[in-house]
Image (cartoon, rainbow over all chains, first blue to last red; front, side):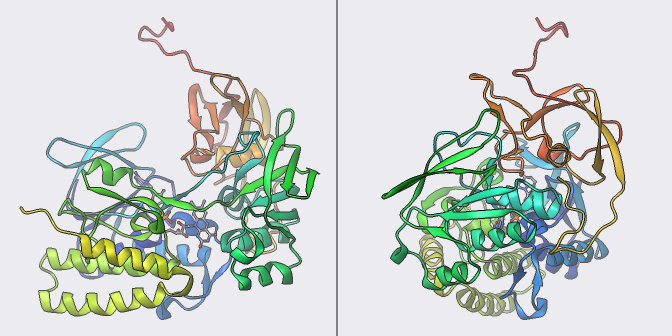
Length: 355
Length: 107
Ligand SMILES: Cc1cc2nc3c(=O)[nH]c(=O)nc-3n(C[C@H](O)[C@H](O)[C@H](O)COP(=O)(O)OP(=O)(O)OC[C@H]3O[C@@H](n4cnc5c(N)ncnc54)[C@H](O)[C@@H]3O)c2cc1C
Ligand code: FES
């Protein structure tokens, strides 16, 4: 198989990029490990408020459907159930569907493998019934299966707010949110949101341990003053995300560690090119950001790719990138300004290898 | 428990399919993963850990943590959260390490 552009990962970043590239006539393929396009949008029932104008306000689930329909109607090849698992000696990527492994030749590769959820460790964290908050959301909204009936959530953040509300709407009793930080370290607006929903947050608290014979039945909440035992059958961990980068490692991209971008990430320049000049990165794989940031980074990477493929000339590409970087700055203000600052210094430090 | 009337999502008509867990016939909705089909039938413990034989089930639901292994149609250590349930599928509890050998006899 041969394509001009191969995109690894069919989440919002990969789909946005595929659409733009295909509209410009680039022969594009998406390699997607799971059996559907949409990535982690597929279970996000909450309305995404700050999408770029052309998308309006819609839920993540609706946006995933919109993207997948559009992408298949525009002639992008979607290889579902296919994982990028390696590279051949000449740099061609190797893809497997579990039965066969084969090479795919690509002029340009864009890696949009997204993010994974961080675990949190306490005695009993491996018991069935203890899961990441995203897993609970997948069961609830993708699979339509109740993950439990009585829950506590570890971590007070915007994702746990959205999902705690969804759990409750489906009949799960959310007994409370357990947060290590003290009340003044958490965004006031977020605390008010939890309050207005009558979801109790225990600050300066932790899960001391969880226990149960076969699956979780009890947690002990250590909160300075009270060591409280609670009967539950679900513990959801909301402890942040880190970029998924295996394909970039396989493609020999150079890495660095930047806390504010979510940890170990590939080095990249202002077009999201990595140290391997045919490999680009975008979305949460390029640093954990908001959904607007995810879409805009994909647009920037595609602009760079179109320029490299000589479909856009340098002047046009430069103009577009300037507009898009302004949009990215706008998307990454407030809560995400540290992400943007870290991104800018990463880009400024980037020196492409001499060819 | 399967959520029939989801308060946040449009209702979908999903065909019911049958599968087997430890030989017992159960019902799932088409399109679900094996992990969800088991959870929907009240099964949370899918197997045990390799060394200490502690119970394991869904943790990430995303193919990343390897906590949800089961045996599917004879194939040990299959990720139940990344495999779609199919009519007549035979699913078994993951009781430990699979027997791996060159000769097919486990030696
Ligand atoms: C379980 C979970 C729940 C989340 N819930 C929320 C939420 O409620 N709100 C929120 O704001 N953010 C949430 N996030 C953050 C999420 O990362 C973003 O919302 C967004 O989906 C990221 O977009 P993306 O395109 O960068 O990556 P993703 O949407 O993660 O898409 C990446 C895609 O790449 C595929 N992939 C990965 N590796 C390979 C490979 N080697 N070969 C082929 N394909 C591969 C994956 O299967 C996936 O479909 C969640 C993340 C996770 C993991
Ligand atoms: S639950 Fe983590 S891999 Fe299946």
